[in-house]
Image (tube, rainbow, N blue to C red; front, side):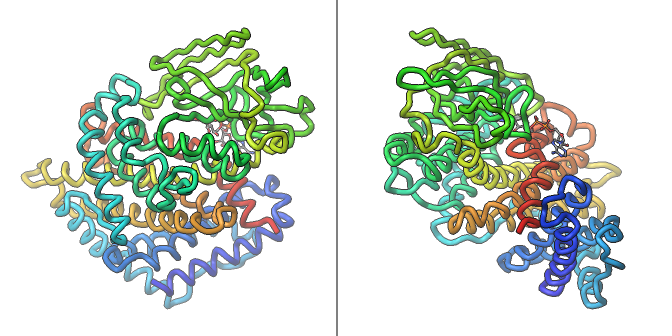
Length: 522
Ligand SMILES: Cc1cc2nc3c(=O)[nH]c(=O)nc-3n(C[C@H](O)[C@H](O)[C@H](O)COP(=O)(O)OP(=O)(O)OC[C@H]3O[C@@H](n4cnc5c(N)ncnc54)[C@H](O)[C@@H]3O)c2cc1C
């Protein structure tokens, strides 16, 4: 596999170097968006192959298939842009081509599929003792408490049951990556990812996404909160005592975060928030909203005019909310209906002179104008976490599909006996191994220098979310018509997976503006 990893890396590096010069060290990305997107993908896939080469021996067979397929993909992604980049002919050398061909033979892929069906889709990944315990404890909890309710919550678009939050709080799931001195468990990002993955395997919306928001706010506070704010808010987040929502997006502002227009105006002892927000997930149940608002009305200041606030609000359990403050401030909201990701409820909100005390401006006076940077620090953690969510949904789809194809019979045999079914399952399994390889590597990297690790976390998010979409859809296909029936969980997985490439940086923008910039910038 090392031959392939080196060959793919070399091809991707050549493309990155050429794109760097084409875009004048990233300054001209927008003049060459299609080129940069392909380069970002190729570099991401080359990075995944490198992580696969380090995968534990127990998953080596599936890892090799994933690496071989990705090496082909790296080349295919770059081929159409090779002339623009002046790369000449894009060929792997004979040794690499032979190695790739040997790894991805149909027989090798089918063998993985057959093993996956026999194991009912369970895909072990060896971990140390502590992490093994984390994973198995969370799985036991998720199987017992979450799974039996996941379908009902989805069908009726119910809110996440309070019991889940209470139990998860007791088990310490909200404080896994928060430092001990602030009330967390400091088990690190991989423990947090494994927890997220197992919860998402049971339900993306009813459990797997509950940790995301506290994680984003905690990382923003750690990056730029005052000491008093860290001491006040982090222990409460870690204990699950308060639930947070994150509010950046507005009806007319999505990817272009620097254009946020919801404003915060100074008043006696604090700030008045006025404006509209959109897609604020869990805003009903949340106790606080981490909200990005414009404190400098001069729009030409862009991102430098934005500040992050921790906004208190009362809890609501329905699809609508309406709150009034003594001083006259109002907050109203309505959840937008969605085909999946139900349970969390994502709201369009209207704030009118909603009061927030000075103490809840993140970073204090020094935090004024730093909201964009702090929010982005939070999003780096959110993206990593979403890599874990994607792995969980993918795992669930593989298990359901493996069981289904073993039982479903056509033409006198279980459909899992057919070579093509096994081939598909082999690919599904190998794609999950690849998604885990990059996500777990990103988690470990985030335990070190978070800023330096942010681009890898973005790659993990980009890649793992694509895998979730692809694998859930393949699983649905293998269920035939029943995959389209709401009573089969695979249809929920398909609907849930679709949202993953959209939030925390919609896929094309993530590739261009986060991964592309980090690769091509000086
Ligand atoms: C279920 C759900 C939950 C969400 N939860 C939250 C939440 O809790 N908090 C929150 O703040 N937000 C949340 N979001 C919002 C999410 O983060 C945004 O939808 C996302 O950032 C994209 O913004 P947008 O929808 O406005 O798309 P846009 O920014 O309008 O992008 C749409 C498309 O336009 C193209 N595009 C945009 N800009 C460029 C460019 N510069 N170059 C090339 N192409 C471009 C891309 O193809 C992109 O896919 C949620 C969204 C959903 C669907």
